[in-house]
Image (cartoon, rainbow, N blue to C red; front, side, top):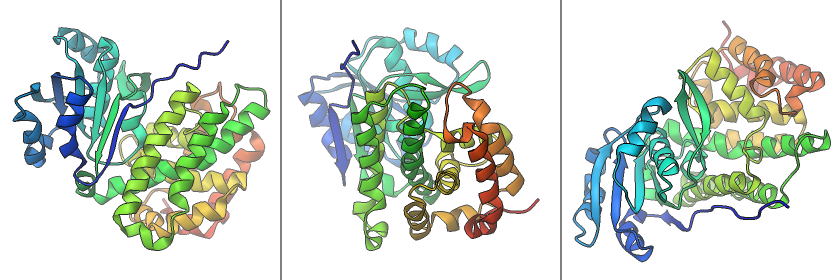
Length: 352
């Protein structure tokens, strides 16, 4: 029998001035002894908000501690050197959140995520991107007990993180297609609630009328979408609802040009390529990425056409145990053809 026990966030705040709710939320949920981890520069940048926590006499807080260690070999012993806490809070970008998430997983301590950007769904998922033997790997970690998404904080993030978040949101379209394709070819099985959650997470954003794109409601919908994406993966027990052929292309780019482009940006480009390849919701994906300014942002990055072609070719080998559309020659050839034929893609990539 398949277990139906899953871990989902019990505390979700997604609104303007949301961080101000954190002290009372901690007390309400019975957390008193707290480890506060922050990313580099976060303490100074958001000192007024952090002070709200530090000056609350009913809370016993250690920190803020700057910790962005991503090396598993170093992080594991560090985790067991810490004293026991009721909860670990990480505030910052991906490094700080993945660090706190993994420590809480090792120590079996509840974890609360306070993202300062929406570049991907990592702040609301159970996975962590860490260094293992010198290579970045996705490893099991702790599903957040809580997510505090302060929209005012998120609005201060550099614009490139906003576009990265958009790319990660829209990728659920091609990922869900790949998941269904995979099951139809005898690999794995679909959890239909996870599939529904993943589809709803992206539809709530891509169907918003154009005038909302530059308003606060849109950012909130992106945050909520990424939270739902993290939950869909927890329900499924794997990353399939949110990660398909488009993510494999992004992982291949990480090997070819490591660290050059944000994950969500790579994923967003690959999503458009795969939507054309799958012939699935391609008009919706094209319209969304055009109207949000995503394509315009990507064009300024001068991504090399040959790099993208090589990434597509390498992608199936990233996870040979999966059977996405890109694992079959028919779709591989089609993906390579759309790079050369689609007008947007022709205009998007720089020639070597």
